[in-house]
Image (tube, rainbow, N blue to C red; front, top):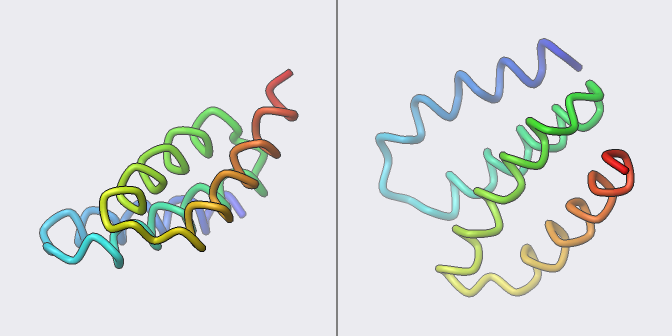
Length: 79
């Protein structure tokens, strides 16, 4: 999972240049998930927070709910 986290981060570099917030939010969420599974909880929280910010900007309620659930899982691990 560590390499998956790094792979997603590399994808983010590419997507930073794109204007499609839906794609960026999805990759951020996927990166957060990969970091979570790699037990890199601080990094996971960073990516999930960035993702939810974009989802809120585009009013994607379904994705916001999913990310909120993932954030709660990370918070439990950080306790």
